[in-house]
Length: 205
Ligand code: HEC
Ligand code: HEC
Image 1 (spheres, rainbow, N blue to C red):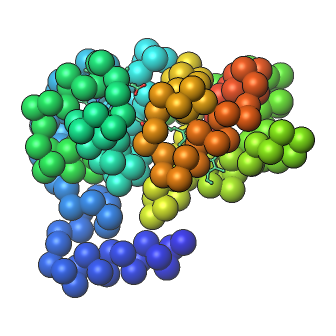
Image 2: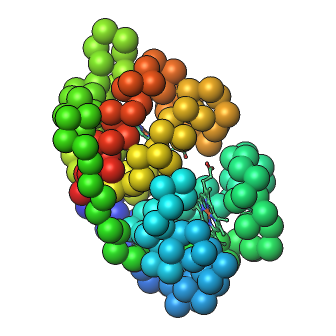
Image 3: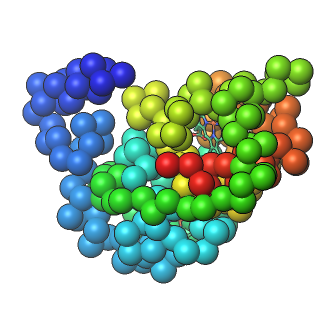
C-alpha cells in the first residue's frame, strides 16, 4: 500500500501539482481551516464533533472526504443538513477542507466492552452464515481504511453516526458506495450486529 501511495505522490509531483497534506488531493490546509468556521459548529474546530449524530472528520482520508462533499453537492448523497452546507462551496473549497480535516488528530472514543466484544468478532471475522464480509478486509485492523482505494477510516467514529449510515446503506438510501459494496454488506446485517460493530468501531484506534 505504501508503495502505491508513494507512486501516487510521485505522479502528482510529476504533473506539477502541489503535494501538501495529502498526495491524493491538491488542496491547501490553511485555506481549508479558514473555510471551516461554518463547519466547526457541528464537526468541532478540529473535526472532532461532540454530538454523536455528527460524524468526526479528523484524520479522515482527504480523497474520501472530497468524494462525499461532491456527492452532497450533486445530490448523489442526500442529507438535508449537509446539502445546505455545501451549496456555496466550489471544488477548490472542498479540496482545501478535505486536506485540512485529513491532518487533524482524531480523538479516540470509548466503547461498552461486552457489546464491543461481539462487534469485534463480526468486524474481524464477518458472519459466514449470512455472508457478511469481515470489515477488516477493507477498513483495516485498526479501522484505518485504505486511502488509495477510497475505503474510509472508521476508527473512533461515533456509534450513533455509524448506525445511521449502516442503516442508510441497508435501506438503499445511501448509494455513494461503488459497486454497492456497503449496501450488499449492510443488507445482510441484523440491527443487533449493526449496534455491536458500531460500538466496537467507536472504541477502535
Ligand atoms: C448543522 C450541522 C452541520 C454543519 C454546520 C456541517 N455539517 Fe457536515 N455533517 C452533518 C451531519 C448531520 C452529517 C451526516 C449526514 C448524513 O447522514 O449523510 C454530516 C456529514 C458530513 C460529511 C460526511 C462524513 C463521512 O464520514 O462520510 C462530511 C465530509 C462533512 N459533513 C463535512 C462538512 C463540512 C466541510 C462542513 C462545512 C462546510 C459541514 N460538514 C458542516 C452536520 C453538519
Ligand atoms: C469490500 C470492501 C469493504 C468491506 C468488506 C466493508 N466496507 Fe465499509 N466501506 C467500504 C467503502 C468503499 C466505503 C465508502 C463508500 C461510500 O463512499 O459511500 C465504506 C463505508 C463504510 C461506512 C461509512 C463511513 C462514513 O464515514 O460515513 C461505514 C460505517 C462502514 N463502511 C462500515 C463497515 C462495516 C461495519 C463493515 C463490516 C461489517 C464494512 N464496512 C465492510 C468498503 C468496505
